[in-house]
Length: 228
Image (cartoon, rainbow, N blue to C red; front, side, top):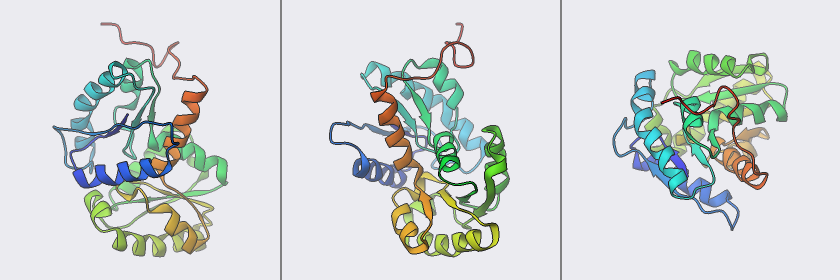
C-alpha cells in the first residue's frame, strides 16, 4: 500500500503512475490518499494534521493482506509511530532515499520546493546522521502543488538549480525532494549526466526487496508495539 499523506488528486495520480511504471509484474499496488487532511504538506502543521488519518490507513493495510506500506512524502510524517503499530514493513521515501544516495556517491544535494524547506531538510538529514554527506539543499521556488501541476516548469528550474549544485557544491547525486516530482528523474538525469533519484521509484524497489527477504522493522525496542 502506498499512502499519499495529503488530499491532492494530482499528486496521487503522479505517485500512482510512477510506481506502476517501475513495479515488477507480480507486484500489486494500492495507492491511497487522505479523505480528510491537508491539500499538501507545506509545514509542520500540515504534517501533524495528516498523521491521524495516515495511522488509520496503516492499520487497514495489514487487514487488507498488504505486505508493506510506503509513506509517499519526502518528510516521512509520523513514520516512527506508524512502524510501532504495524507488523509489516512501513517505509518512508525520505529515510530510504537519503541512505541510498549515500551509497551512490560521497556528496548529495536535495532539490526542495521553497526556501523555507531548506532548514527543514537539513534538520531531517541530521536526524538520519548523514549530514557529512549533504552538499546542499536547493529550492525551486515553487509550492508542492505546483511541482505536480507544472512539470515543464519544474524540469526547467531543476536543470538550472542542479547544474549549479554540481558546479558550485560538487554534488555527485541529486534527490528530487518532493513526491510531487515523481516521474521527473530520468529526463533530468539524462540532460545533466548526473545520478538523480526519484524517491518513489527508489522506495518501491527497496520495498520489493525487503518483502522478498521477509524483513521488517525490529520490534525489540524503538518500534515495539505501543502499550495500551
